Length: 241
Image 1 (cartoon, rainbow, N blue to C red):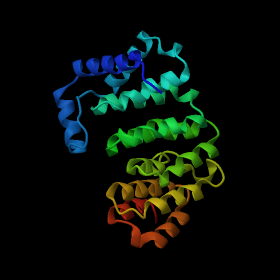
Image 2: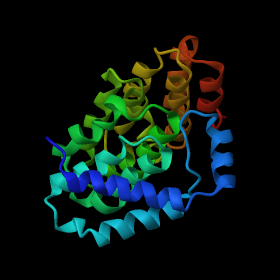
Image 3: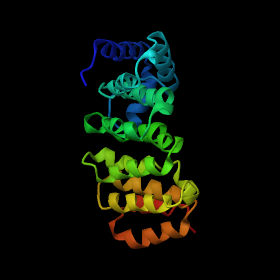
């Protein structure tokens, strides 16, 4: 779908406002924390949120058709700085979430094609958008669609297939029958990748799942221990007896 001039100008306006409110100390903190994985302007989450909501209201974006609003949010992921991408995360998670359906899973996958290339952006997106998207409605279908990303080509999309569920995993099958098995299937696929952030995604998800299903997590670890990094094993077993 071709991008119209108004959508481009929104990304520019947000970028200029973020730049105007940047703080060198905040930038330094994030640069150290993420070790240069992505450039930061130095704007805290509260500041990003305020700018996003202000621009959304000023431009009356709620009047646009849903797909155009989604395109506005996705355009933010094309920007260079972490805060600009986070603006897209907040648009999807706070301004569009209740309008998204299973038909939009393809749209939700698009940022992983080229524009999510670090663990910080990936994990913010998972926690603030994808997990909440699954929880909103039709949980089984939505969860299955996101879990299918374990077979995706982009690395960070495969990580998202696990990390998207970390806040939901403590419910186990109380979330829906078969949820635990679905999560273990994701872990079994991702654990085959020795890359650190694939391994840590598995460890994080198993740690949270062990709150509800300690025996099944223990069985998974026993079966896949040879494939798991020390870091992943430590996380996965952190809450086990």
